[in-house]
Amino acid sequence: MKKTFRWLMFTLIILFVAIQFIRPERSNPPIDRVQVVEEHLQIPTEIGSILRRSCYDCHSSETVWPWYSAVAPASWLVADDVTEGRKRMNFSDWGSYKMGKVLSLLEGMCEETSNGEMPKKPYLLLHPSAGLSELEIKALCDWSEAEMQRLTGGGQD
Image 1 (cartoon, rainbow, N blue to C red):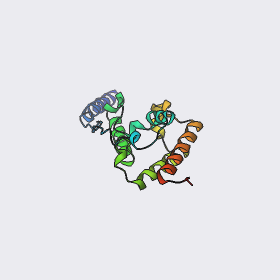
Image 2: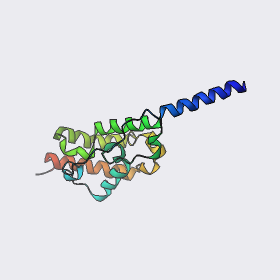
Image 3: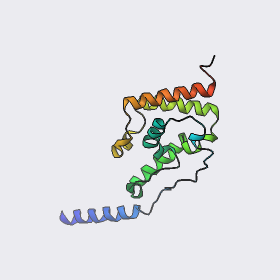
Image 4: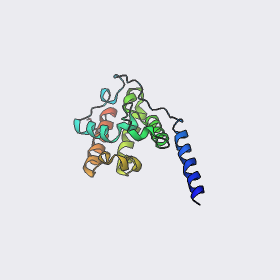
């Protein structure tokens, strides 16, 4: 029994070391400051702080890669979340979006934060400060609605 356990542990350790050589891409692409969201939307300081604290790690090219993002298999999960997040919405590439996508993203920010879909629960377990209060969600929704109105010319007489 002890011998089997030792072999099992030895095999698991070797496997753990071996998977460390399967490294996902963990980078922050260069940022074109003309494309960043701040150049295209009116973002109050409070909203900018919320976005940076709760969204930018997965939805920008300014990801802060924590230590565990270098250790497999967590590295695979983190890199996949960041890649997927950047594909769906990237604050660093905001200027490349067509108006329809911009409006959809603004609407989605409110909807997904209000429904508790964003930030994702696993992210919040490791980054509790990224959690949003009801007041912050309301502020984000009010801002996104105001930006949609501003961008479409709505609310003007």
